[in-house]
Amino acid sequence: MAVVGAMALGVFAVPGGTARVLGAVGLAPAVSACSVTVTHENDADDAIQLAIEAFPGGTICVGPGAFPEQLTITHAGTTLRGAGATRTVLDPASPLVINTHDDDSASAVGNLSSLRPAAAIVLVENTTGVTISSIGVNGASGSSTFSGYGCEDNYYGIDFQNSSGTASSDLVTGIQLPTDLFGCQVGLAIYAYDGYFLTGVAPSPARTVSIVSTTVTAFDKNGITCDDPGEDCLLTSDVVTGIGPTPLTAQNGIQIAFGAKATIHGGTISQSGDFTGSGGCSGSGQSAYAVCAGNEGAGVLLYDPASGTSITLTHVLRNEFGIDLYDDGNASNGYQGPVAVTIEDNYVTSSAAYGIVTNGAPGGNDSATIEYNIVSSSAAADASTWGSPGILVDTGHFVVEHNSIVGASTSSRASNGAGQILCGPYANTGPETPYLTCSVNTSIPTAAIEGASESSANPTVLTVLGNTFSGDSNDLETVGVLGGAVDVDWA
Image (cartoon, rainbow, N blue to C red; front, side, top):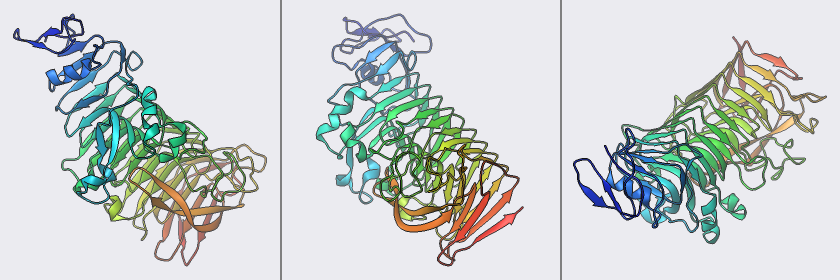
């Protein structure tokens, strides 16, 4: 398949000798397995988009360079392949085109008028089998677009909207609103969802999105977001890095939410959270957290995920919460029934609040297997106020076995038995913005492993086996309030 490039003649060859006029796209040497190769940008800044439309379902190769384009891909089987994530970069400048909507912002099923507008740099829309590989997506130059919109419009780097496909060896960065708008929490670096809150129907077969060996940095709300029943995300060997301690937003490195299923394997997730002492926590700074700051973030947030979600062999470090499971049991949030998740063989280090938290849905029917993890707490500057618990489980059936739980290296140790505020439930102000509120405050002694239950209707069954402890004053503490009880089985 001969083809390609970008030169002033405005003509390129296609198989069979046909010629088409496509602006300033012209001839260049053929590249093996490429339907077309775009060698540089044209005067209209649409060379790549023209190639995508000219070769539906083809392999669009893009050479090194900066390409100030927003792209829309609607043809099944299309491959967009760059010369390397730092060599081929999409970096459109302000003003960006508002080219899509967030279907999950619908106030009710079928309510198109309530949808929030959005700008996506790469929009994959209502299609299947699309691959985006070795491409850089840099949203920094487009950020000022949102200054005039307030919190009205969303910003996405790569948006798999009701589509299946793969992002491989990409770099997505700079998907940030201006600093004064960070609290809007609407900047998502990679977004995979199927629009369940607009349609009311989970797609079948599921929309499967694979994100492989991809790096995400400098995002606003979430690094990688996978939402909705019928959405299945496979995340392998990705690196997601938040902006670190900030009062501006509650970041999540990865969010799996509202009925979506995910397999997270390998990779490094770091520097996500809120890290402020506002909203009721005593003290200040990264060491002052219980679960009471009001806007909490996590390295990996599982909010109403689908059963079968798993996290394995992943390094989760320097986040406010390392791994946080919360299931509110609310069908309107995509809840699909009892959830069973696996958290296994991970390295969860230097969390400012908890290493691993699992809060099951009311009724106690959810379950989680937490095994063979290394959980090492962050040093607490004010250890007399709270410790840095390793694992907290609440409402459901939990197997906690063969974990290595290491307290922080402080003189009074990480888990010192001092009372810590346990807060909940989560409040949902929109499909991308679940966060904690403090409608319930209960003092719980800190420990390496903590079990809690808020009422007799929400029991907790905790099976403990073969865990090792280091640097913790208390290995295990349990608390039942409002008639609740924790049943501990030393298996």
